[in-house]
Amino acid sequence: MASPLENEQALIGSARRGSLDAFNTLVLHYQNGVYALAYRIMGEPAAAADAAQETFIIAFRRLESYRGGSFRAWLLRIATNICYDELRRRKRRPAELLDDLPGAESDDGPPLPAEGETPEQAVQQAELNRAIEQCIQALQLDQRSVLVLSDVEGLSYQEISEITGANLGTIKSRLSRARAGVRNCLQGVQELLPSVYRLNDDVD
Image 1 (tube, rainbow, N blue to C red):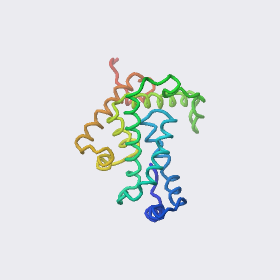
Image 2: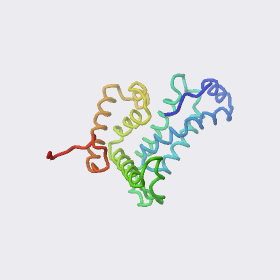
Image 3: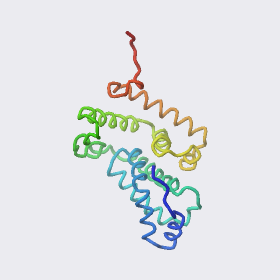
C-alpha cells in the first residue's frame, strides 16, 4: 500500500491545470499499486502493464471528474473497470494462444533468498506465492477483485463498494466466499503452508 503523498491535492490541482510534472509525480507514487491490482485481476504481466498505462491516460483525461476523497481509490476504480472490460472482451474472442497465458514468459527461477533464508526456503516461498496467485486467478472475477482490493490493497468495505458499485452486504459476501475459495484451493499444496493453516485429516 502506498504511503500518503505530501501535497497530493496541490499536485492534483496543478495536473488539472495541465502540469505534466505534477501528474507524473502522482503516477510515480501510485503506479506500483495500480500495476499490482491489475496483475492480480488479469494474471498476466503484459496485460497488467497495459491496464496500468491506460489507467493513468484515462485518469489524466478525466481529472475534472475527480471530486475529492481518496485519489488512490479513484485510480483503482478506473483500473478495475479497465480490467473488467478487457476480461469481458476476451470472453467474446477465441481462446488465447498458450504463449499468452500467465506464466508463459521466461522464468528466471526463484528469487534470491532473503537474509537468514535457506535456498530451500526460498524455493518453497516462491512455490507458495505461485500457488496463491493461481488460487486467486481461479476465483470468479467479482470475488477476485474484492479479495485483491481488500486483502492486498487494504481498502475499506466502503471504498470497495464505491469502486465496484456493489453494496456493502454483497462486498462482504463476495469477500467471504473468495477467502474460503483460496483457503480450500491451497489445501492442495498443504506441504507449502505453515502448519497453522493446514487441515489435518488424520490424528496420531
